Length: 434
Image (cartoon, rainbow, N blue to C red; front, side, top):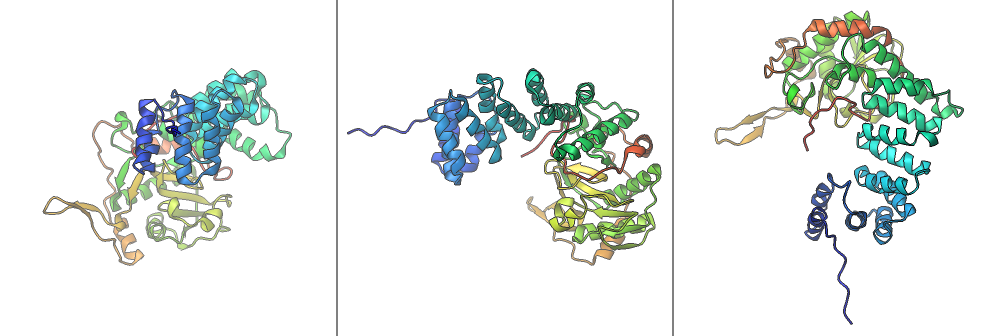
């Protein structure tokens, strides 16, 4: 008897992923599946995904992919595959299957909602808006019309968000009340931010405020028009930048009329260093963080470095408490959203964690971390040069007056509500680097 050869994909892109799996390179296979998958044959895509899932031990995804590979024209198999992809963190692979399931069953709310979920996880909010608007005749107010408003905001379409919000009644199910409150606050922040800026696809400070309630203290002076739009990619931070950020924070507090009486020190080393420096700059006493303490500035260097137990105490806002984060990762947003952020980065190294330098033989190395006491490093920050980086000379200027004018315009809507995680970078695009 002749054994039948295993079925292999015919698509060139999928064959590359298949070959990577033959070589035992699962990450390489996933890289080949990261883009350009929307229009690939679904049965062949499912073949590759089944093999990846089997190698990774994801039996639910493997079974769903096997079923789709055998029956790529059945809505249930398409939906099950898409659902499993979303659950396993590969939402981009779910989109073509869920889109086809919805085409075959245009009245399926389950397929519509799962497709919207996949679009949201991939930050393809404009496409989520399109598919929801195209099926407006089957939308329930909660969650569907709410999701239409949400994705319209995330894609920067304020007129549509406002029109749909006007059609959205109060939810009957109380589980939606927090979401309703947050969405209303976003629209309130948008109304105040419009008075301070264009709220277009280059207004990073404005949209950062609308979506998360964050006042962004500085914009990157590098590559604004070349794809970064005010965010940093990789950043070697400096004491000068830390001091500049604290002085901008001081200007924000003054423009907002905020009068904190202390600085609260979070327990991680970076936050303690920066917090001690902040106390000197702001002329306030410093003490350990207490989630119940009112009228205080809680200072974090990077909230992703703060323990989950402490983060939990920052979600709900204590009266007069202001959370400031110096270096916030925009591609891996922290679990809570700060009220004030100095800068947005994809990857950053704190100045006390060593710096990259070139050796005499041309190699690149990182200097040892600074093991001095936290108070000594904080003193170096206070004594640093706060002059802003001139940058590449092509990015827009961002003087103190522009920042304080913005804060003056939005101060009545600042510091409202909880500090919910911000899962999307919103309507202002920036280049990402893998």
